[in-house]
Length: 154
Image (tube, rainbow, N blue to C red; front, side):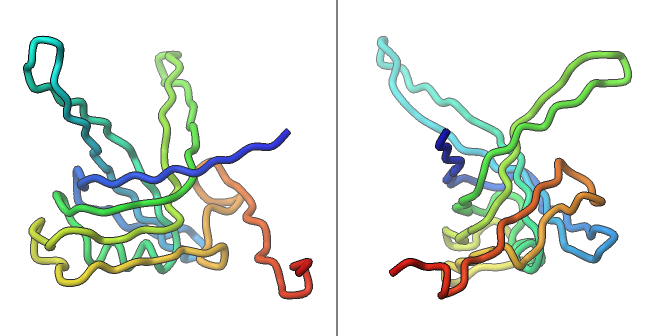
């Protein structure tokens, strides 16, 4: 069965990025992103819907993101969607979606603070930049190795 898991979002950070490191010294940057949609209802009134998304960025890209981004800044992210599920100590089942960011582009004028600004910056975070390992925190996954020139059939 074929499948495809790709998400592209552009929005504003809801909080300053939080940078931490795994025991194997891989950077983990977590941040919240708010995206919104505006429309007019049947009566002509303005309406707005806001979607809040938690994002995770690994490796050098996470360090760069943490250095230049802060609450309120605009960013475009691309990655894959993951569902985390857990049970609270009270026995309630909880779940939330999270975006594992693989690429990002800083957008806007940098008006969100003094940690960045200037021209847009793009980062492609490849499989070599790390990610959660089976011993780290998070859901854990194994990235496939990058194909070599010998693997490409043309």
